[in-house]
Length: 563
Image 1 (cartoon, rainbow, N blue to C red):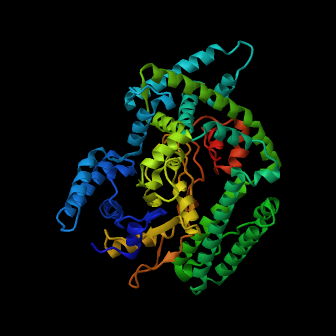
Image 2: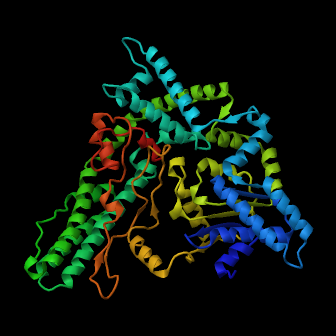
Image 3: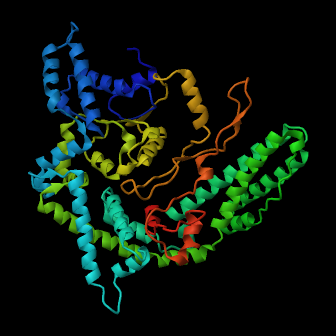
């Protein structure tokens, strides 16, 4: 097989940590197998010294099968050490080529005493664990209801008042369950909670250094840039079409006002709010007689920009000092939620312990706890000369923490494509990939290297060009940090904020087509999924930061997830 220059670099580079960003159809799996084959055959490295991890059993089985076929093919060559290759083929069945959870299971059984785990544990099936989880929730809530005094309140009763309706408490139970699923993916959930709760007590200066401030700044800049470019595109159509002189003058005023507000943002938030509140869109002055289609097109572009600006005007109608005061009031219910979730986790763990069951999250947590012992981590690290992680874009914080403890300074090979991240329901965090991509691309250290495979060998050029034309208009490096709670909470409704969608000409034989409005321009920035936000906050803090029209059942706890 003929390899491209970048593919060959990924195959042959040694003594480095490699991040391979491999686009769809770029030959990622073939490359991975070839790299492993050369390590085994040419360097005489036993397959026992390789740790190859992926996220599905079928992918692990396919990898073993393809590697076995590659090694079998070596036996047909004359100058190969056939005895060594045959030995490696025979060891493939027991080799550490598996899912990450299978690796964790082996490690927990090998070092069960360090993890405080019964080595005879069983992995619970999804149905059984779901029943136990619901039983733990019901038992906990029943106990908490019994503790509420007739003439007083408890942390639990405050949460019930805040998050439940008149009929039942399902929303609060769902909230606790989802928060649990999120916390178990954090390497140090206690530290995460303490840090997140600290963000509810901020002064104006600290606010802009917090996740709140960074999110607000990003939202403002993205929306204002989008509005400005939409107006510029509308103006370009006026300029190129006779009879739209008045419309062009009107659009100049519009994007001049938007530009002034963007400049004011550099001076400070208050200056920006003042400039933003002064933007007014006069009644559209088109010319259907000159060209009705163009006039409607210009109007649509202007209305999109107008909607973005007016949406910001509504969201930013709250003074920052007042917003910070409301934020401080939210700290106590957040502390109550953390406490209730911790109580639930203890009860759920007891129920699993009664049947000696673990779930996948337990495996990860136990593995991390075991590897926190430096001697054990060093022993595992010494066992593997090379560590491979396929589908790196689908890792989460807990899994990343585990891998960091078993790799050496120069033996880690990561391959994936952030655009193919599909495990959000498992709390996969593609920003881990993005962060390392950016760090490696700027890396001067010889131990870390980034290789990008962008050539597609699977699709014809027409398909590739068509897809690129569409997605270059809606995708950029401004990716959402999507934090899901088992796929049900804390989910942003877009993947990437993109540049404005300009008219494009797909062919000289057809009229320019307009790419659909970018997702960021037509979707609320956040969808609130669970719970019931107290009424006094709906028009305040939630409106300021999260959504143009706060949902009726807004989730109070999603506030903390932004941290």
